[in-house]
Length: 392
Image (cartoon, rainbow, N blue to C red; front, side):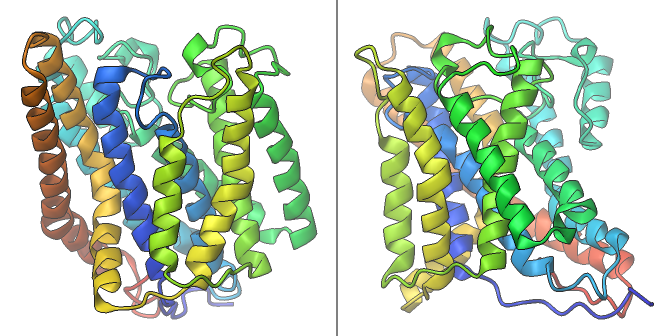
């Protein structure tokens, strides 16, 4: 059978695009505020790290919606081409952008930057272009990251794993087996959140990360367990939601779902009085209950009014480039804070707003001048005429 047949685009879920943009904006705010408050209980967006898990459940839902019914006329290689065209141009740009700013981030928290040789930085950049995790010998920042040039790309590395698993295994599974897998992974999410060390890998987990799902950006056994758990549970839940056709119709769905995301990230660290497991239960409930409800409401509701439509379209377009270009600015911000500890609070607030604005403007310019044109060019070169040039 000829698998290179026309794959027409499906209508997009505008609200889900918009919610992805809201989550990206929350990530930027989370990293800027983290420079002042750390990961501890004082962080105003204490649960902002859960936006990564929201991205994973969105990904599972959208992948299932976009591709589940196409496998009778699409090869595995065609799927991988489409995903690479959608994801990899920004991975390359985000890595390159982080490399340009690496030496400007020198501070005590990044012990390797000051002594990193230029050739090692270039080699680390080229290695990172491939999405293969960096070995410790090329860790030019000293944080043990799988992509030291631009930290958030760690979640895209797990996203690639999800796409491979979907194409080779998950797409073939019936709903019952998929539901069983999601349930099993959900149990492991609860165990992680409650700091139950099933495999013996969590003993060295930093205190601030205990009873949370924070982690996944390194190659240690702890990070690999956390990253795989963070990926599989929400991705499988999103894929199952898509297959089951779960939809919740909600008037003003985009605004209510956005508010729910914002409120959830702003919930303070729970259990500070001696019951840290309460925070773990909150993280687990967010991933297993709240996020599926938000996605179901986003998929089942309609965008009403030109204002809501414009907001969803604009921030949806910015979401991916914003996520992959904001972090170098956040690290420059950290460097500025370290060198100006006595600056007035008003100056700190102004600088933080400037960093936020630079991140938004860079994301917009990157989307219009790089990401969209490059993806169009790649489609014209990599897709056959029968495959079509559009896709998710």
